[in-house]
Image 1 (cartoon, rainbow, N blue to C red):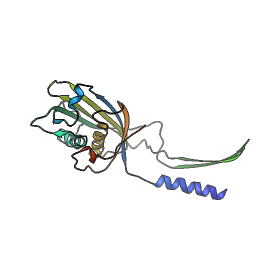
Image 2: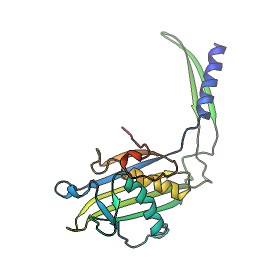
Image 3: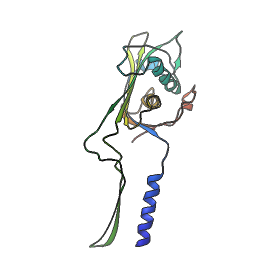
Image 4: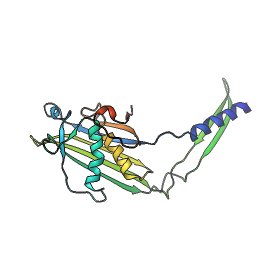
Length: 217
């Protein structure tokens, strides 16, 4: 029995210490035009359009640079000379403190043994409260709005939101633009969760160069 307990403790400890690549887990909501409006989406040339800047929003040129990489990954081409789509992007990050429901950071282990009608058993528990009320949580959001410049119709409206402890604004917002465009131009679900690895952005000219994103079932 002692050997079993030691093995269980070692297994859980090693699992807790294994750290993989950071990912941005995003909640995505998309509204896409149907035919015939959807015909302009695939491989379209676009120009950026600017609306009113939100309070606390990064400069428009920075947001457009982040979004441009994500748009290229789904096959869209930035072309101010002969655009078919007008694309407006927004992005912002806010902070909040959760003073209820979560304890301070720490680790806890539990071990239980018992005997029932059909024999004995061993139970093992592991807890890892990761929230500290003194540390802020950040809410990051982006949106991408596409308009057919010939008809004036809104043909694609997608938004992504993430809550987490990270405040490296540009990396998180760039990942959210990628999440927002998952499945473009015809995502399988309007509402979905998408996980995007936080990797350095690489130049891309086709969807094949996109970083792997994963849609939660």
